[in-house]
Structures are given as structure tokens and as C-alpha cells.
Image 1 (cartoon, rainbow, N blue to C red):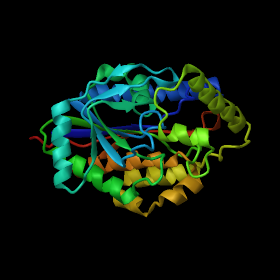
Image 2: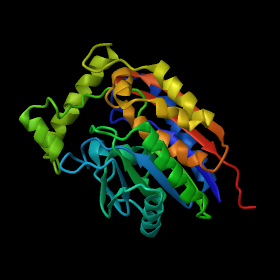
Image 3: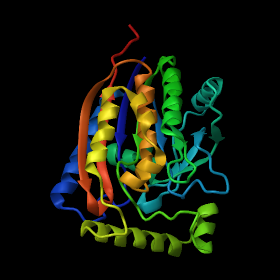
Image 4: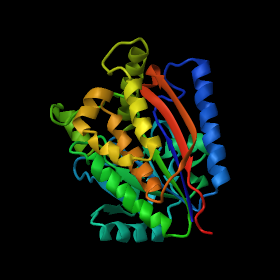
Length: 316
């Protein structure tokens, strides 16, 4: 058995929002390094924790966590479409394992996933079909969302499953860090927006274009230091990365989802996925950080981060 981890921020504005050529090249280089790490590790499969952005999951039925026994990419923001290579029997075995640990996760045999899952693989490997992926959805955008303690505990359970599997398992997370995208709240949304948050599946091309236009306009304003998005919070981002690299993932329990939203933006609770993934890695013991990248990119409305770590092979 051997386990490792890769985590990366995602943003629909990557290479589309305003940023210098030098910034874009630094991001591309960092993703290339992650790709080399993944290829060298040669995982049997990936267990990925990631959120959704009201593209696949809606308020008509919003789970805290959902394990995909099958999944299909929606292709938002120009990403690839089609099925992921999901190891179905392994996913179902994982569900049984976490149930025994008192986690009643939802299950989907056709989980719709957006750029929150697939963008990092398109950036790291060129195609999300390049590696088998067992996806675990973490609700980070639709309150009430799970606590950081619960996300950690689920990750630890998943980690115990992986360490007993005898396989080379790569944990992954995508999301965050600090970012405040123009995401509406159902509590004060007008009727048409409320309906989209409850059941916005299969939007028209016009609706998708209008949504992208709003985000791109917000990116231009953010690059200029103007609202409506909160400024990025590099100090908070570094504090989160410090907790993750420390191996003391339980320290993340102190994070409060409402305070995170206020301090680091409406999208910052996507860090829940990172906490789950690092908790899964830490369940097997100590690990060594091998790669890190961070750059606050206002025009992408994202504190752009990447991390990779590895544990020693304990099969001998």
C-alpha cells in the first residue's frame, strides 16, 4: 500500500480572467509539476473530494456528502464532457466502509460533476479520463454545509479504507482557497434566482452565457480592486496551508463555516474538501510535503494554491 495527495485550486477564470503572462506561466508550470508527481506515483485510482457550483447539485435535494459510483462531466466553462472512469465496485465498498463508521453518505450512480472536479485533471494530465477517479462531493456552497470537524472525520474514514486496500491510492481535492465569486444566497434571492438554485439543471445556452458574462465582469472589477467580490485573503490562505502541511488536521476543527465565509469569501469553504483529503492522507501516518505553490490572483477571483505530499510505501 502507498498513498499520496495532490490538491489544487480551481477557477473558471483560469487563463480567461485578467492576469499577466508571467502569472499564467507560473500556474502552468506548477500544474506541470503536479502532473509529473501524479505520473511518477502511478496510482491505481484517485479518491477525489470536491464541491459543486449549482451545476450538478441543487436545493431540491442537497446532501452534505455524496459518493459517486458513476459520474459524468457537465463540461461547464469549456471543460470536457462525458463519463469519468469510476471504479464502481470500489466506490460501493467505500460506502459500506464509511457506513460502518457512522457516515450515512448519499450515493449516485451518475453523479453530475462540474469544473470543481474535472478542471484540475485537465490542467494536470490533459484529460480527466487519464486516471480512474472515485469522486466524493462535499457541499461547500449551499448552506447548511458540513462542519470542518465532520469533513475531517469523513476523510479519516476514507483514509482507513484506502490504507487497507493494498492499492496505490492518490487522494485529491480541488477548491478554494480564499475567493468570493458572485454566488447568490437562496435566503434573499429573487424568485427566478431562487428557482435556479432549487432546480437549475440543463440551463439554456443563453442562461449559461449570461452566467459566464456576470463572472467575467466581476473578474475585471476584482482585478481593479473593486467589488462586488471581497478581496482575496493571502494571510488566511497561508494559515490554512500551514494547518494542512502540519499533519495536525484536527486543528481545522476550529474553523467555523460562517466565519470562513465572512473572512475569506463565499467560495472559501471549498477548503472542506482539502481538509477531508489531508485527513485521509494523515490516517495512514506521517507524510512528507513534496510540492507547494501559491499566488493570489485577483483577476481569477482566487487564492491559487497547489500542494502535493506522499507517504512511504508500507507494504514491505
